[in-house]
Image 1: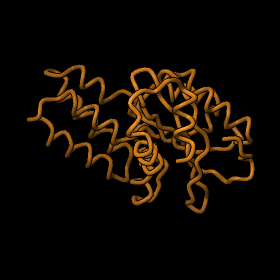
Image 2: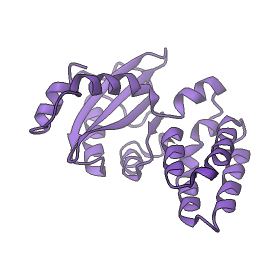
Image 3: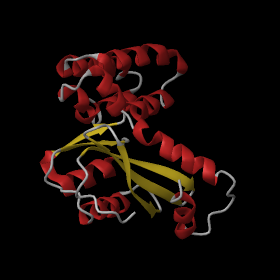
Length: 216
């Protein structure tokens, strides 16, 4: 929570949120260094995953030695607040990859079941391509087919399209792309927090949430 980060060769930073109640969320950052080792970096509390909460997290990382001028890959869910805060803090050197799993889940939740299989197939095909332009074309064609009956879903598919394909544009190896195209890097840490806190029925305040979560 307060360790010096300046000596860590962090190439990837994942940011993810965990809702513990209706009015309480923990936003966590975990880094990956050049050897593939994971480093829990920070945990802050907020009422929502808004820009202010994320900004506090990012400012904390910078104040502890994370150089904002070094190019890194940031992995986040689809929240616009996250991308905005990352760009503001780390500038154009930051590459942002939106979680493909979150994106696909959000699309499926808004579509009738009869469209799920075909839509998943197109998205999966696009994610697996080595050519970002071809992947983008596939996704745009999918949005175009859905636009007449489901214009809101079509717009959602296109929103943030550049950030959905960042790992492809970076020409990362396919196996590495699969790991860095979603927020699963922090899944173990988040799963541990959920397990430790599962018996808590009422969160009195944010301090209580941090005390329960830090040992994880």
